[in-house]
Image (cartoon, rainbow, N blue to C red; front, side, top):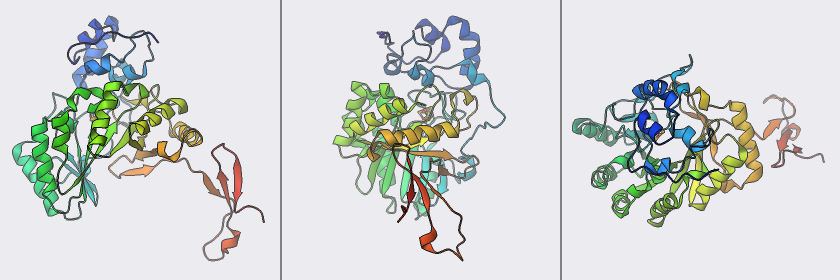
Length: 365
Ligand code: SF4
């Protein structure tokens, strides 16, 4: 890989800016203007510096640099692939599972991921922050639902808010007695690590609720020295972290690449949590793998790294039906049996070990 010494001073938002920094060919500009008119574009200086412009398959570029392939929307793709709208009782809140809600505070991000499942909703051209009235309504909804134990701040990226505003929001939520956990989903520590400063960390620590941070990253190269320092700032301050990644064709759909990513998380004291199967967001089919490939990769990962490094491979069921584990399974019954006639001793399973070898359970006497 050739080293890219280029680092723009500001975030690149227009295809012409990407072209002038050598990140896209000038000949692609007409198509990319059409892409950018529909889906937001932003590449921070930190991310731009990671891209090797000489590599047409660069896994960082593939996550953030727009492509003409995004102009192709498949029949099964949808604007709201995981069905947020079907579970939104008031503006800014998604209440899909009984004990937790999403609280969508902002619609802007440091970078815009080309596979984003909320790509129709995020970006500077979309609604920005919640109005004061909508924010108060959302808080009132959480207050009125005593079953809500966890509030998940998402968006957009909540860490795009100022520390002053975040401090107010964290205080407002933590004053609700039944809310015990506030989880913040963010890409900022890898996309714009300088935002994570002492003030930001202090804003996230509150009395009355435990703060967790879920870091979204998809490739080991995103863990630069500054990104690792940003992650350490959370954990050193007593804020536990979990990971969130998306399985992406040409980015991390390879056991060795995924292994390196998971090791980075764990080295940074971030517990691997979810590996999402790519959602059916419009114009993203070129980035999705098959479920079978995802299961193969997860089975291979099982053989390569300890449980500390294992995320759950999950799929969000279109229509708002929530997440389901997407496998693989390592256990299958050998014989069929009926609940009425069955003797427990007759139950036998095939079980696959970490090398892929198959065994019987229980073993032959
Ligand atoms: S940071 Fe999250 S919300 Fe923003 S574009 Fe990326 S995936 Fe979408």
